[in-house]
Image 1: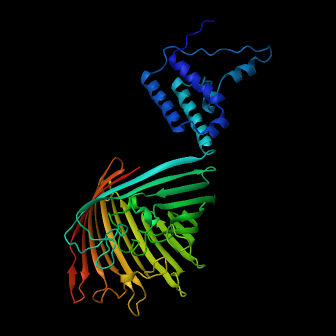
Image 2 (image 1 turned 90 degrees about the vertical axis):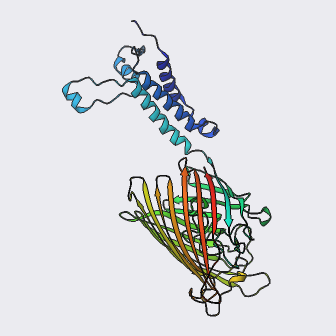
Image 3 (image 1 turned 90 degrees about the horizontal axis):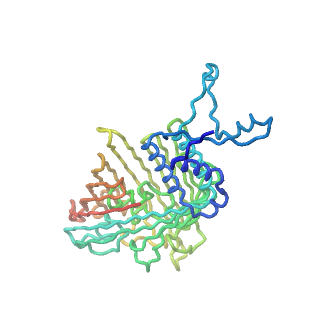
Length: 472
């Protein structure tokens, strides 16, 4: 019997089948040295080359195994790998099923390999790395405006070292995130540091470190340091903020952007009804802030609940606890409540645009984690606590987004009416995205207006900021 010589494509195909059949599953899963995604990509590239070359010029001869008499039929059946079942219509019509082409066989090989790779990936631990870089420049026409200070204006990002804002360029964040999972991703870990966002002497170099276990669906158990349940903007990551700076309400000078040691149970996208899901979180919190040990036996509680219906989100959060200053016998109550809403509309005017509205309100006591009050914001007599809200709208077309935000903040809770107690802040923003949103260039114009203690209002000078953000 004459056989046809095997060409390079034939060798590749049978070599692939050999690897799939005799792959040492356990050893591969344990070694962790094989780049699974790269291996899949290489096979995919081989398939594309086969498509470009077209069908083989000569059929591949399948060797017939030698069998003993009386066992020919069973041997022939076993010699045919992955037999294709004959459709019922073809059986009745007496038609011979069409043999799969070489390209179809390679596609089937890749599908089997992908299935095996998926099972192997779940057996070992995974490791990933993320990076957020933010560089800023600011121009300020009023040197009395402070960044993070409590005397005049705190609308700018409060995490920057307090002081007079001169025209400057500075590096805001270099957050490095190490994360992954193991045990079929039922346990996940996160460690995040920022070596430039804060001075190392403040011990705030490490931001997050926690483990999350998911014993059952919609139940996540978290222990470690991270953001506890709080308002909408407060729990939004720095890379996904709508404007360069957080609001006064959502900053750490207000009721947001807070981290602490905690034990938390939570769940996301829990189905409630058709197109309706909800998120929940309950946490026991030390109450001393990030990277600080507990100094009393009181534990704080934090809770959050929100409902999602298509593009609409409505939620609420609460916090309550006792914080005790060193040498003080009577602790102070740190409490906060908040309500939030967000709506995202897709394809409003064009197939590639979206419109976003967001609003948030909050009220509570301005107590530091060490049990002291924020010096310049002591609540007035009869006041129940600081209060504030903001509302914003953003419109994005393709890679360009414009937005406007108005906020009102009263740190002494005098009903936004008493002279010398509150401030209005208007922010206009422009964002340009590049490289699938990994690169974002932003420009914001901030216009704070403070009420004048002598009556009327006093404008406190415009601030212009630009920011370049890179994430991956």
